[in-house]
Length: 67
Image (cartoon, rainbow, N blue to C red):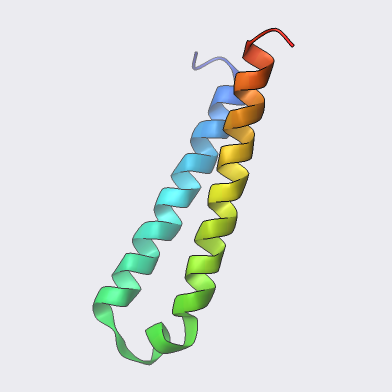
């Protein structure tokens, strides 16, 4: 499984979503001017990264079913 490049790409995409999510939560918890200016932008990045991760996982599942 770890030698499969598609799995590694999917894992990297999920990890990227996690990093963006944790960064967003940290800025929300901290508050302040940075949070007010960038909260929506950070969450838009998270949603976009989630979309990419889900698409990668869906393509991986499609390819694994022998299509």
